[in-house]
Image 1 (tube, rainbow, N blue to C red):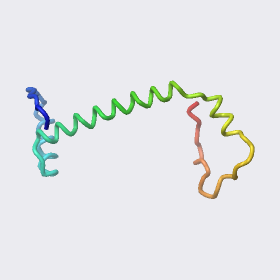
Image 2 (spheres, rainbow, N blue to C red):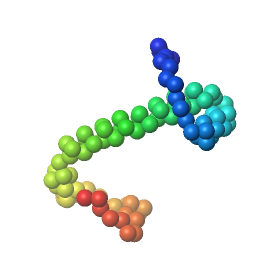
Image 3 (tube, one colour):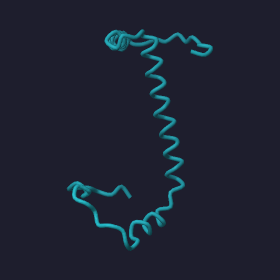
Length: 89
């Protein structure tokens, strides 16, 4: 760990106990478990931000033109959409 910083963390006893059990099952310290959990949560936020920026740049008209172009191959067996599929657009 590069230049670790300390932070006093207060957890409800039930969460602390659950963390202790999970860390023990994983064979790591509570500190490692909590650090990993925080890093995982940060990665989720960063990924969400990245995907939101990408979605904002989307050109749905170009996408529709691409999907409705001529040529190509028909869908293969197994490529069907599941029953009840609803487009999110």
